[in-house]
Length: 353
Image 1 (cartoon, rainbow, N blue to C red):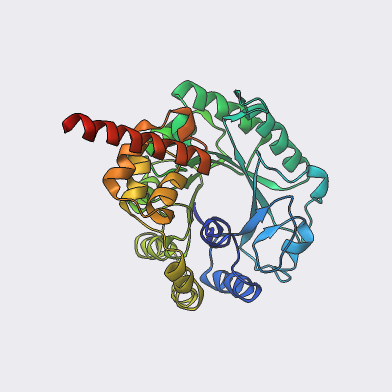
Image 2: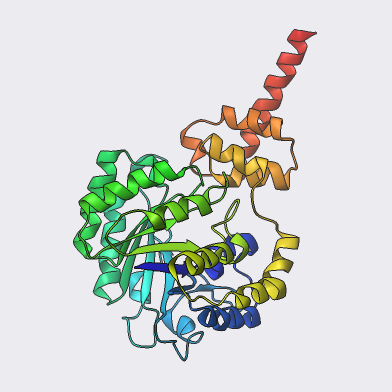
């Protein structure tokens, strides 16, 4: 079975700091229910103050208020990032009114207090175990799948499948992977995972490959459930996500699905178009370059959108960034490498003269 997960209210929030407005949030939920998406993601669970205009929540009651009459046939989801998790004791047990699924972003490594790179998967595993113990369906979202060797990926799969999750995802966080690369990880997962666990795909469009990769994944001869993430007009981090209006049409035309497309167009016109006019996303050379050099896309946003630098300058800077610094973006790092690039250029010009 192919399931469509709609993530506008969660991944789309990277564009506008999750500030969609209370009216838009409520209407988006109702319209996506009308579309008939299989899984509707409502936002992030984080330990921070709640604002009804944002899709960031700090307890389950706030999420329940958005879905007082859950539609039969739809699973409702929220996401947690394990490096900045909401404490488990702030999360109530699952009940018939709460979301059905919690997706947990797990990291392979992280920096400890001294800046040393340490393993983070054990922490992620223990947190996910707590989610399962509270009764929620679990989706495991290992960030940046391309950083895993085959052996490491299989080891991670075997570890997390002990929790009997609903799904384990192939997550192309920075939009660097083509169809063949993604399908390599899909095959590894399929060969090493229990039959009742779904495989999910979450892609980004830095190299304009999300749709092609998603359709390749859907067509693959994998005898298990598949989940594909998408958002309205591709709204999402960096160059954005798979466009839900494209993948729903594809699923309707090719597999006889019955998603209603008109509400997606209406939501775009009423809410998403205005967000795009103020904070555009989508393919651009800065995001292409961050994917090409395997850098956090926030570097592309900083140099290309905030600083409005030329593409050749951005490329020159990205080439200088140390491997470890490419993973986590900070403004201080970005400014350090920009300064280094400018000094190198001055030296080069001086030598040429």
